[in-house]
Image (cartoon, rainbow, N blue to C red; front, side, top):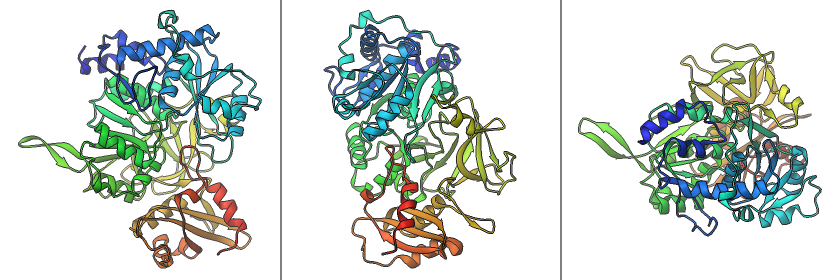
Length: 538
């Protein structure tokens, strides 16, 4: 079947969902010798960096499904997966969903005691862990056995795999977790239908430029990678999945593999900002796609200045310098970005504008009581979408605390402008009530500092409220060659504006390693706030 016809057939397929895309793509007549997935590590003797065909991918998944089935894994059995390699994570996900089981994908960077507690709270039936993570779990009470390693699972007999489990739309299909800024991450449950809702919408639309050959720089255990795997399979696209999303690793992969689209989180774009991008061959890239936290203007501008894209002119399709950056705001719970905005070198709508919502999503800006507020007024972001998570696994109390009057409260503070575009100001836990109806926003402050200081590649603003009032500390990550002894206080104070600027206590150059982050690279401002409340200024 031709790709365009296949995409339409998949979008209309009532049986397809996040748990069976590979099987349904093959059932609709996709060429088994066509693209499957490419990994950056060897898989069952298959070399790193060489694509698995669709048929070979299906065989490797069947082998793992057979191995797991022999060990008693059944439909609706939660199985934790803790590993580093993207291949181990994705193939385990595909094999477990083939059985109707529920993979619980865990970021490899979790501290062992946090990982062990997370596994205990799952109350599942077992753990798949690579050798390194199996060693980290030794001595911890997990409440379940370690079944083996993902590599061992690959030794199963594909011919012995049971028939693919037939999912219902409400069946639980995967558990991913939040970034864990305050401790043990929350376990986010998605269903067969919910995690395919956005993909179904995209398959019904013309395929976007930059989605034919994708470099996936998203963390492998994140909801976003599950989405991208299913989207790539449905689009019959090529995709290389990276196990390490560091800036240097991403740049090397772009030059070697030459993707037309790169998908990642804002932390990766911040890392790329530390490099002179003109020194790299990035011409193949026409699209940068961001999800999670929205990205800062200076980081976006560096990216859209490189790469190239096709444009339609009177003379036909022409390749021109410069790429496109699609920004959005999403989270594990949302099941996909809820918003989208397109940036090019000649666009200037920034200021943390995340654009308009996708057509499948309904959004609202709400006051503390759950009532909508007028355009221009800051409030809580509420979301209602078929892509939303089903709840927090084994935690009904937290699930229901996140809901109000039919809306899922994302924990973000936003406002809508008169044109129906939304602007993100901060996470609510990071914003500070300054009294007299004034609120100070750390994310918006960071945007302003970066725009005013071109010799700063990234910054973290910590605003604390204590007995002595509100104080603001600004941590600057400097560009190579920038003078760390230069006093940037005046520039930073002016960028913060009169209200926040009046509370500025200190401006401190730091290394990126000095900033505490979660396993997905999100800054742990709760930790920084505690640190700066107890430390005197230097």
